[in-house]
Structure formats: structure tokens, C-alpha cells
Length: 113
Length: 115
Image (cartoon, rainbow over all chains, first blue to last red; front, side, top):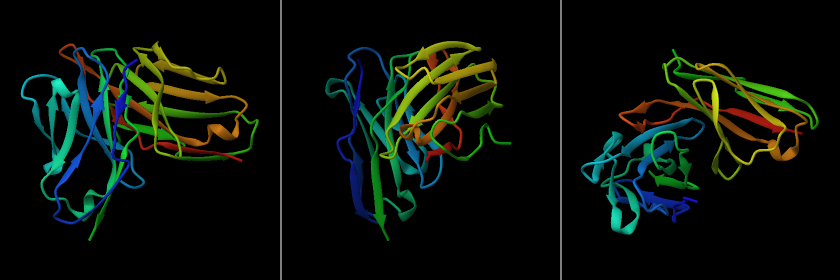
């Protein structure tokens, strides 16, 4: 069964630091990849998604992610974080239309002002 | 207008009771889901419906019964509530775009506390 691993459970950074959150998935075929964010007390929102094409995907709020097929990875990056980026970040994957979207266990990001 | 709305947002009840959570989406999507988020924030899919038809049914106790009266609504009924059912339940919807699933649009969640 496919799975998603997020190795960083809790990340603490100061404002303006650069961010990279790791995400690896286990499925070897064609995949759709997503990053979602959950701000404190709120629902999940899509940050960015990859279906095909350019492996470097740009999302909202200055986030980007790079799909590296050979490494089964889809790491999330932001060059300079802000206090308002404090949230839980979830990587997710599915195999295509009609397939369930599987979420990683999430990474809690805490930005110090 | 909220795209995916759930009611109630908070639910506190005793063990053994039966409760329902309702979900409605006004996005015109064909597929709706229920996810459970536990206290450690782990999100696990429970059910998925496409045009009122059940297409995903994960290993969920029979006490949980989803119902989709039409493609804009997906309700979740839980019988004989147990302590372990305490969680936040998220409804979501999506639409297949060019043969691939689009993003999930989530509701604001329904926090269920079983005492």
C-alpha cells in the first residue's frame, strides 16, 4: 500500500530563516502530489500540487516544492519564513482519478518572532 | 458562501449515544469525503462518495454509516459512540480534472468529544 512519510515532526525556526520540509512517498507509478497547510484552529488548505510537467511547483504564500522522481520525494521549501507561517503542514499523494488521497502525519512548524 | 460547510462545529456527548454530522458543498464537485483527524493531527480517510455512490470505505467500524442523499451532501452517522471516536472530523470535496483528481476542499471540521 502506498504511504507518505514526513520525517520532520516538529520544526522550530526564526523569522527569515529558510525552510525545507521533507516528504517521501512509497508508490512507484504515476502520482499526484500535494502539500496542505492547517493554520491553528482552521481547516486544511492547499498550498500547491503536482500532477505533471515542471517538477518545480510554485504555490501560494511563497512556497514551492520539487518533485524528484528518482528519490520519491516532494519536499516543500520557502526561502524566508514569517511568523504567520506557523502551522501544521501535510504532504499527500494519490495515484490518480478516483484514488484516495493519503496524508503524511504532518509537520508542525513553529516560527519564532 | 462557505464552499464546504459542516454542522455542528462542536459536539460533546456521552459514550453510547448516537450522533450525526452533516456536510454540504456548493462547489458542484462530484466526490465527497470524510476524514478523521486524531489528537496527534493524523488525517485518515474514512469514506468517499462519487455522485452519491460509495467508492472508498476504509477499515471503519460498522458504527459509522455515511449517507449521501445527493452529490452536494454527505452526512456521517455514528452509533454507540466510544471514547476513541473523539476527534475532529473533516468533510472534503474534489472534482476530477482532465483525468486526475483536483485538490481537496475541506470543511472547517467538526470536533467530537465523547465523555
